[in-house]
Image 1: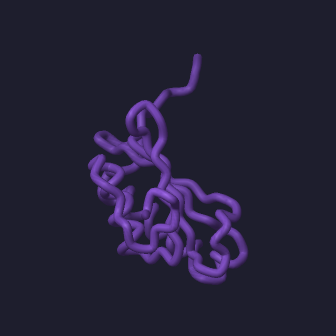
Image 2: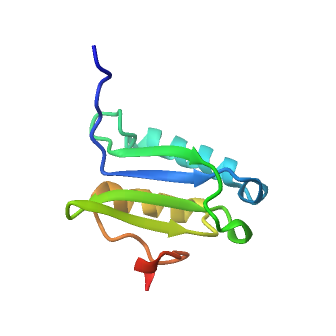
Length: 114
């Protein structure tokens, strides 16, 4: 029997590299996980749509915590890369992905931020 498939609207990755951890990324991940659980936004909850995982270095070591988001858009994937992320910003990013709304622009450093 194959594993159960859970459709999602997006995937959030929180860097757990050494520099980001020194700047609080482990606490950010835990707080965001609890928020997604409490609000029913986790992909495996009824009505939920978001995946959250830890990742290795996302490359903005001096500006962490770093968060990356991927979501389907127009037959492809939209990326959002964020540095210096705090919990209120992570919460807004997650809500935008869940609601399929535009991603916040603050602290964004991907080419799409321009």
